[in-house]
Length: 262
Image (tube, rainbow, N blue to C red):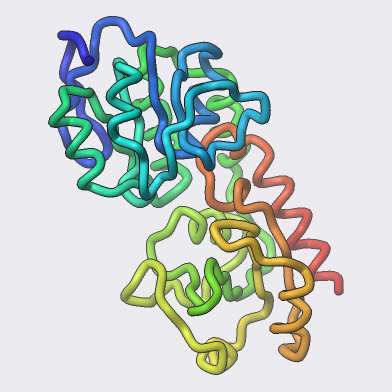
């Protein structure tokens, strides 16, 4: 259980009593898992079943982001639990707090917010700013000054859902010259009809491999007759904020540039 320490404020404005020494951390978000594991190997003792990076991660698994085994998390006796407003449910986080655990919640919607959020979260883990975070900040400092295109970015099928307003992935694409055709929607992840999408005349379709694992075959079957390029990208590079940000700009830019030449 969390020991007496100092009070800090997480991304939601919640005060979190962070122990003076943090030696055991449980992460309920894949990107935060990777961030902690690479910054301080051995500090992480638990993560979700969906935490795939680093690939050799050897910690206790505590279920999914939306359905964690709360009892299992409590049994690990972490000094700190790191979570995300969008990925994790309020009732699960409330149960962990009620059990006496310190819970730190992140909630960035832009790259600058993510970089600051990660620095504060790692500081709450009693860690100094890691080199990869400095590299990520430098990587994303230069503004994009090339041509701009409009994209449809689905994240789910049956029903079709896509990126809407104020999303981290939308900000990533915007900084690469890609405007989300549903960026002005009232919802962050609206449910849409494909005929309505076509009326917005996107220049490109961007298909990430998570949370829905869009395949190249699906891309051909659904969007071949649209007459626009279909770009398949890594969801880790598009939607995760953490060490993946160091290489995400170059990899996503390369994929989008190749599509533009078709």
